[in-house]
Picture 1 (cartoon, rainbow over the protein chains, first blue to last red):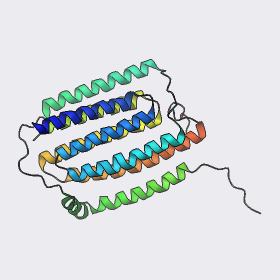
Picture 2 (spheres, rainbow over the protein chains, first blue to last red):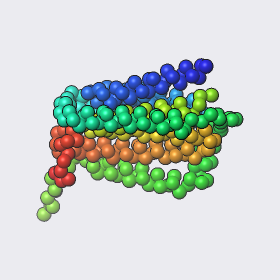
Picture 3 (cartoon, one colour):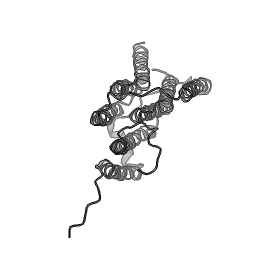
Picture 4 (tube, chains in turn purple, yellow):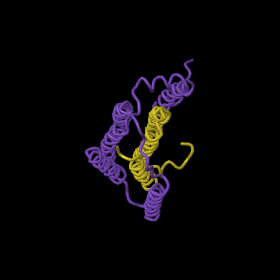
Amino acid sequence: MFEYAVFFFFAAVAVIFALVVVLHRNPVVGALSLVVSFFALAVMYVLLDAPFLAALQVIVYAGAIMVLFLFVIMLLNLQHMSEPATRPIQQFLGYTTSAAFGIGLVYYLLKYAVFTALPSGPFHTEASAIGVALFESYVFPFEMVSILLLAAIVGALLLSARSVAPREVAP
Amino acid sequence: MIPTHYFLILSAILFAIGVCGVLTRRNGITIFMSIELMVNAVNLTFLAYARQFHQLHGLIFVFFVMAIAAAEAAVGLAIFISLFHHRETIDVDEANLMHW
């Protein structure tokens, strides 16, 4: 019973703050709400027997990625930028399409993806089990991800460098 | 123990909210945050199925998705900084030319 209470409370928190992200005009409020939503999702990961990934969620998402977002918002001074409500047809179509998409998704999940049999026995997902799987059967994707991160660092440095006029060659 | 489909439905709702943000907002940073929301909804689905079927593969995939989301956020925000330096706005409607 306690588990259900925790689940519904944090599910409500995640959904409400996700709605704030989408609907609020101020991107700073949106970023902070997204942090709260990610924390609620970390609680979901704990309920799903994955405490290691919950820690990763808090450190990587709520810690690193959202700080990057907030940093960029503050750097570009966007917190006062207003977003004039133009294109009402596009807005209306966006809201109705996403609402229909969500309702359809929930409907088909309830129709086809209801698992009556709960998984039995404990699910061992401690960091050592993940590490062994990562370095045995997933070694190649792991190395690919490291190369991808390196490429992302180089790309971010190149893109965010203030473009200067082509330097004149010294005589 | 909470049944798996509860988590799947929560994930579907969060994904639909993210889709709504991408379709209706024009602020580039907010669109990016909506994409992060969708990525997290998919992560929740991966973990729910991983527990249902007692497979570690779902957890490994979540690990990779987190790494790729970090790379994507770094490059995407760098693109927005570059766009802001050129256009003084990050309204995605303004970014309608391939060169500037």
